[in-house]
Image (cartoon, rainbow, N blue to C red; front, top):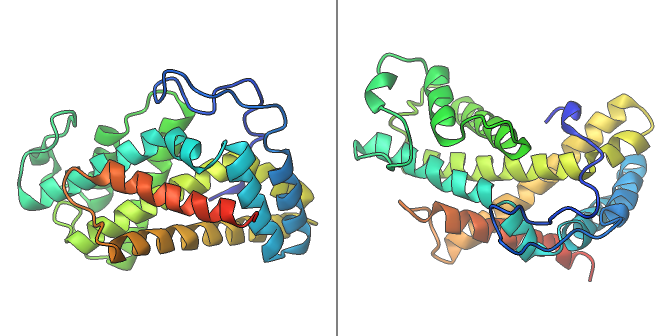
Length: 252
């Protein structure tokens, strides 16, 4: 993620969960990111893992209102993850795409992998001017790029299940990283001793979050919860909550 994605984050008095997710959302309290920013600022200066863990823990507990609300907050992300997985599986199997996805597989014939990725992104997460939509589109583009980097000869219209699962995991992890950076990344940028250190600290935080998310996904697989047609939203939510539970647990 680039440093330009960071901001001062949302303030108080706004819903912790958007109205399109919950009809009676909790309202953010003043200074909800203060402890997260303090600890991430310490991480920016020292690079210590303990400060990073405490920063992510406070981000989850106070900033998001806990792992459950944080997961609900990312409901659009988990819904998109499920749709991406269903589209990629349907393209591979030659089965009908979800009815709400405006994509004709025939239009992908002869297209480059980049063009196919762009078409899928446009169909699943169309631009609507919202910050969440733009974040999801960027996260999906990064996930497709990671899949093609790992398997340069991959055909996005015929991805094997393990590659669909890889895209699913990377998309969700990328969007979680983007949310954290948008909300509290500026604390890292402001407190690092110089620009190079700031970028290094952000990259460390991103890798750390992705590592924990990957562990959560693996634990779900080991427990028998695997990605299937139609269960992506629920599985994505379970992985996100498990990751945020770990973050909160670091404050105990």
